[in-house]
Image 1 (cartoon, rainbow, N blue to C red):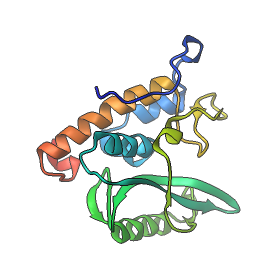
Image 2 (tube, rainbow, N blue to C red):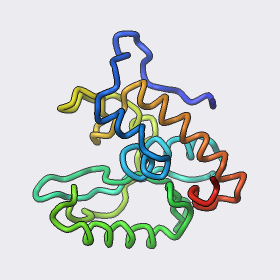
Image 3 (cartoon, rainbow, N blue to C red):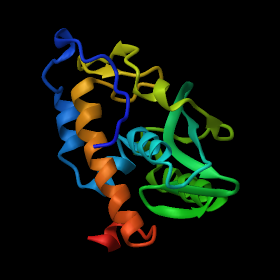
Image 4 (tube, one colour):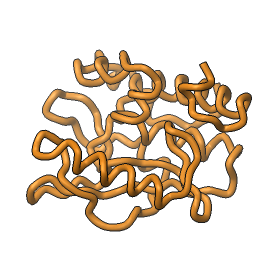
Length: 176
């Protein structure tokens, strides 16, 4: 485990995982870091220093009139982006996400990308801001940020990163 600084470890914050958090953590690494914990992988990548210098960015989107401030979070360096699907040009990532949203149509959580990626502080992504309707701690962008969720997801993110670098930053599905 790296020396990452985690949110408060106050015993009163050690609630059971919500069903949503538990369901998220039961996914494969590809699904976990593609749908629910992309922010944790981005923070782990930045903290690892293995892809320095890079910045963490969040991609805003919109659903009807509701703005989703962090639909996806990843790291970028220049015009390159890195997320659970590997390294590629940032424009390719944005086109892929936009096409994915269009394919899902009205059943999708969001309907379209809402502006350019915005730099974000990694520590802020892990901070508890409020509890969602399921009682889980979430950050200011409504992403899971409870101590137990972050700890479990961070362990898995660190493992993914090590496998990636051992395999030359290939898609983690190919790393095994």
